[in-house]
Image 1 (tube, rainbow, N blue to C red):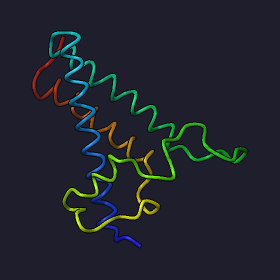
Image 2 (cartoon, rainbow, N blue to C red; image 1 turned 90 degrees about the vertical axis):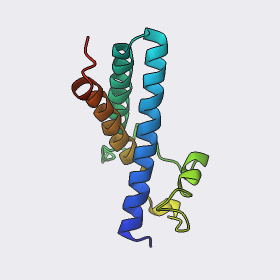
Image 3 (cartoon, one colour; image 1 turned 30 degrees about the vertical axis):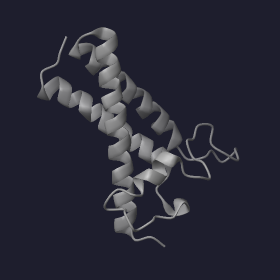
Length: 130
């Protein structure tokens, strides 16, 4: 059984990596398509809301009358991206077994909050408003 510290570290690394990559990609695409930082901020916000919706549906408990969830991002194997994240400190040298990790649905929900936080910082921290 992996320690709680290691599970929390794996969760934080995953959420920050995915949230940062998604927010950065949305800024790039929004700026390239719209030509302004306002368009980039809108893109980050819209992607954050979409991830929030998917994550919200994923963390809902399975209804008692069904055998499985309608929406989930879970799988039985880790992706190559998740395997590479295991090589980043503080996880380097201490592998977290895939079946003991925090669920991918919860991670996507938390990553959506990071992306929405980037949108918030763009608007109120840097003053990027229409």
